[in-house]
Length: 137
Ligand SMILES: [Zn+2]
Image 1 (cartoon, rainbow, N blue to C red):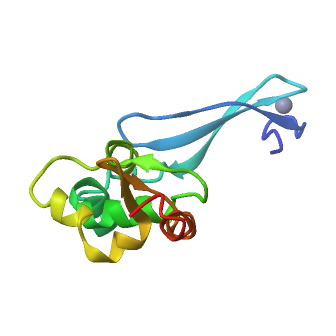
Image 2: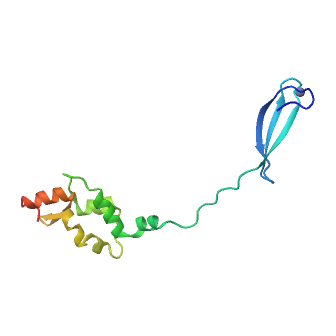
């Protein structure tokens, strides 16, 4: 920016936004004569609205126990066995309608085994090994 009075160089010296019009202004100050000039930069971008609603993934991760069980099963590690109550806690399952059915889905039979009345969850390889050795049934 060149000073309109003395043709000296003007430096940026702060900016602000007019709250009413949302117009942004840049202030310049001449290094030579100290003249000030305000330069209009245009209206501020429209504020981003908070999104309304949640995605299907968010909805599922809040309320869909089948989805939560599947996520938690996929995170089970080899050689680590969780009791059912630990598994429920890790999965974030809430004791709402259908949570029992979600846990008892036969497709997760490969991820759990029972001993002494306690159900353990683990990676299917570890469950398989324990069942082969007769430790879990
Ligand atoms: Zn000047």
